[in-house]
Image 1 (cartoon, rainbow, N blue to C red):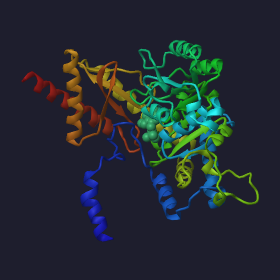
Image 2: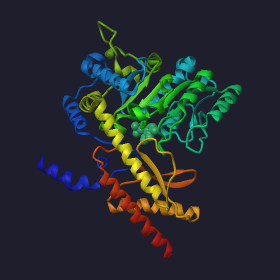
Image 3: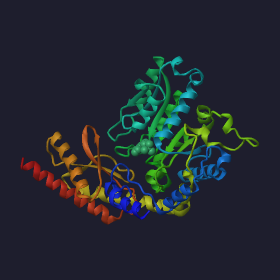
Length: 423
Ligand code: PLP
C-alpha cells in the first residue's frame, strides 16, 4: 500500500487538473467539501446498492429525505418528487423520456417509428446534454430546435411561441420545452415565468435545467430570479456543481413522478418484492438498476452547512464575483460581456483591436494563465467572440485568490499584447 500511495502521489497527482483547488475557475468551479468527502467515503465503505427498497431501505429513504430537504431549501412546492442520478445529462435524459412517453403513450407501446415527428425546444445557449438526450431518445437531429436568445443570452419567448405554434400547424408534436436557469456559457437566466406560460398555453412538458444555478434559489437576494420554475414538470439541480457535494450527485425533481415511472418501470421476477409494495423502488426512475448511496454525502453536506451556512458561502462567492467585475470595469482594456447574476463572470480583453486579433489574444491569455499554474480558466464563444469565463465556486477561494487571478490575467494580457506588437 505504501508503494501504491507513493505512485499515486508521484505519478497520478501531477497529471490531474485540480478541480478542488481554490484557483480553479474553469467550467463551473466546484467543491468536494469535508463533510461531502466523509459521506462519500462511508458510502464506499458500506457499498450498498439501493436498486429496490429492500436491497437498501435506508439508501432509498435517505434519498427521499435529502431530496425533500433540498426541495424545501430551494422553495419548490411539495408536489416535486426527487431522485438522485449521476449527472444532469442523465437527469435531463430521463425527464425528456418521461415527456416523450407522456406526449405519445402509443410510442411507449409501439416504438417511435409509428409516431409523427416530435421536437424539443431549448435556447441556443442550452447545454449540449439536451440535444444529446433528444438524439438518445430517437427523436433525431431535427427533433431538437434551438430558439434564439436575446442580448442578455436569455431565450426569446416570442420566438419560442411562434416556432412551437408553427410546428404544431405543420403536424410536428412538441415534446418538451427546456428552460435553463444558469446557462453554461454565461450563467444567463431564461425568463422562466414567461416560458412557463407558453408551456401551459400549448400543453407542452416544461423541463428546467438549473444544474448550475439552482443553489442561488436558496439565497434570499437571488431567489426571485427563479419565480415561475415551480410550474415546471421537471427540474434538474446538481449539488455536485455549486453545492459542495463531491461528484457525482444530480437531483431530478419531477412534479409528475408517475410519468417518470411509466417511462422506466420494468420489474423482472428476480427483482419483485414481496409484502408491502408501497415503498419506492429507485430502479423505476431511470435506466440504471444499481445505484450508489449518493444520498449519504448530500445528507452530510446539508446537515453540516445548514441553510444559513449555505447562504453565507454562496453570498461570499457572489461577493467575490462582484469584486472581480468592479476590477474589470475599472480597467479600460477589459469588458464584462454578460450580466452577472451569480458567481460566474464572463469577460474579455478588448483593447480595441480587430475582432480576430482580439479573439486570438483572449485564447492566448487563457493558455498563459493556465500554463503558469496560477489559476485554471476556460473559454466560451458569445455573440461570435471568444471570451474568458471565471467561475467562482470553491469553498476555499478567498479574496486573495481572486486578487492573484486578476494579476495573472493582467500579466498575461500584457505579455500577449507585447507578443502581438512584436510580430
Ligand atoms: N446543464 C448545465 C447548465 C451545465 O452547465 C452542465 C455542465 O456543466 C450540464 C447540464 C451537464 O452536467 P453533467 O456533467 O452533470 O451532466
